[in-house]
Image (cartoon, rainbow, N blue to C red):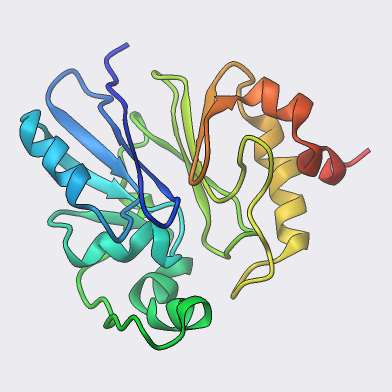
Length: 208
């Protein structure tokens, strides 16, 4: 297996990953937390070349690093507004003590990604534009805040929907290869099979 995984956990508790699915030094970064410096340093120290950033959804703890990222950032454009306008999200959690500006750089559609390397699954529910990134050759699925080892993403924030989450669980998660590893936006990873068997939140949403 050619992938090399590096996991960085932000002060926001969100995970950022480096995945190396090519037979060279190119890599992808999955999610861009506010404190992206450690990820960038790891890339430089290991002489890696970034092929792009894969953003699972537009919440600030997964995308605020856009402001210091140099390269192509891919996102489901249904979440473009969230990624470009983090201030409202931050204000609702932290008040006005932490000011950030609008992101005005380029964002690239997930439709432009090389499908032979990474497979994109749309799984709205946590946000309208939430996606998972699957690397079939590596047996890895990066789910952001869609599915966690022991839970699911909350659906009470802007553009979230429990109805859409339930649909995504039944029509996306249940179709994941059971032997693949889930690498979520928060917390530890686990096999799809294990999560399916033990995650009580998911079990409650599965259609009979």
